[in-house]
Image 1 (cartoon, rainbow, N blue to C red):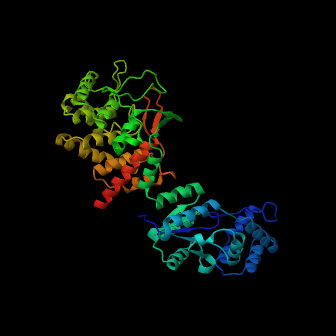
Image 2: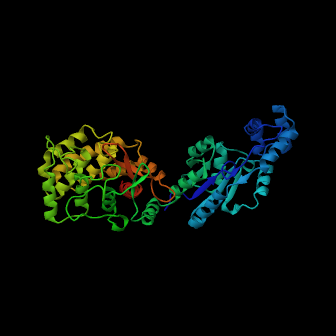
Image 3: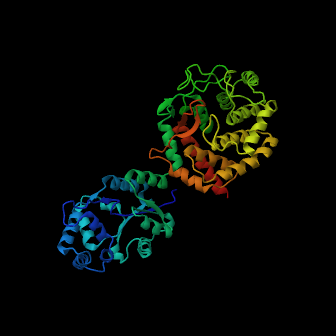
Length: 478
């Protein structure tokens, strides 16, 4: 069930737009002065008549009152209503039936309101359950009295009400009364925000995944990248084979690319990272896994740390790769065979060496997430006792820091595992959900030589769904 059951929307410059008359005795700059004057404010509150308002403005600004009247009438005549927004409001009401009420709240005089209704007679005004005007309330935004009047008249709970306006001072006053304030910039942005506030993020995300099942492809520099790692991770997080496009190798070793390398050498070697993930997500026969791990032990450096590739000509190390290799070895009861790798991973965590990412991974959250995956899947109390408290401290340090959807989701998943409440990043993640239900491509890894980054919308969406679901469980248990 959505938290919000009501929307209050401004009319001018949100649902309606207008154009100042270009060929007129009163220039646009002066017209703006009129609309921000104390006299105009009194007129909008219904405290002075239309003619008195025009006469006063003429005196105050050295203008002919007749010119003021003509400028106002021409401005009103230029009003156009946003058909997209009106239709969207109708869709929201129809989709939510009696569960959502929509109201208008406008700074407007009685004569101008009557002119507005006449000009927009073809608009579906029934999208509004009621319309609250400054002339009827005797108050105007951003005065708090107008908000209190509207809330009282409509019997609204401010904590369940969304307020939309194009002026910051009006939104600020609404927020000060407990409403959820949205600054209006354009229809596209508003639509996404309202869908995120009113819709079920998990169901919408799952809809995106189903719609794109089998085509959740990675991308780099605008190019589609066919690769196995993201597909394996999606499968690991969802246990839904229909979502991914995977070619499982007959032998134990996996390659990052299912075919030739892309944006790198065509003849790309198999790697310990993808292989470790592959053998923990899709379990191989014991003898196949054993021989593969035996071969991995041949690719360690002089410090005894496992390397990235099954290729002696590419001597690379990466702490995230090391964590994934640890996951594999411990899952098969062979963790004691790579102790130097375990020690180095602990030092990386202890001294925060991961903060700027690594050679192959973009963010600090990648290291923390895969470390969570290792610890949560390991049945060794020694590993748990050694790493869990430190992982909890490190993820708490990341709360509120900037990050894309994938980084935020990974952070939240680790927070859930370590029983850390993180409402800040949860709200930010929810705000990033797109209109189609998915999240934008978060960056996970990069080419070591060129630094080109690779992302995947499907993986980010899967992670975000998992993070939102797990965070909801944390909240309900606190």
